[in-house]
Length: 299
Image (tube, rainbow, N blue to C red; front, side, top):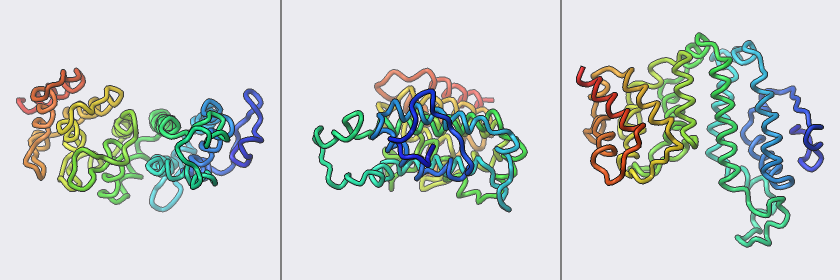
């Protein structure tokens, strides 16, 4: 498919997806650029139709193909998927690079007459790409990933780098000294869904326990500190983050639950700020997290 200009692709039922190079099939620059061109020439609905075939092609891979070791570091297809997910952070820049006329465009409707949908794809296509790329990866982990291979491939990677990359997909990274801006997270809580799938498949404990980052947070604190800082920003569509925190609360030791970060606050303090000390009615998902942490600390 990616060998053809979008305007030359057959329509609907006549379109068949085939590939020879898995590396190109998961290249973020190629995929995001092509998604943009599809939107420009055929609209977002056309783009979604093509990428549904891309998803089906990847999910049709055998377990042997998904778990095959590709290099001496023990990397598998899943490592390529993580590179793809990290590339979403640059989606807007990659789309601009794919538009030869971008530098000449201004924010007037008639400057987008060459787009099928008559507007810049923007946030809507980025939402779609986050859902498509992340959901495909999550399903590959759940259906095809071998627990032994997951454990081995992550165990031989740099622990700080792995923790940085995975935690960023869940909640983003703090910007400077601010808790309120976190860049790089997958949208719709998909990073949390991915991490839970990996934990279920044997992700080494060192990748989700311990502490990291400028605030020396553990993963509970990393997720909940922005929630406590600005409760109004919570969106229920990110509910997987709360479910991940509940899972962590059940798996962390008492010492880990009591651990204080650079701000001398533990995880319970942050969830209490949201559930009991804000003017908003707390989401029941976070009430269950609070209760799980309390129960573990009391027992």
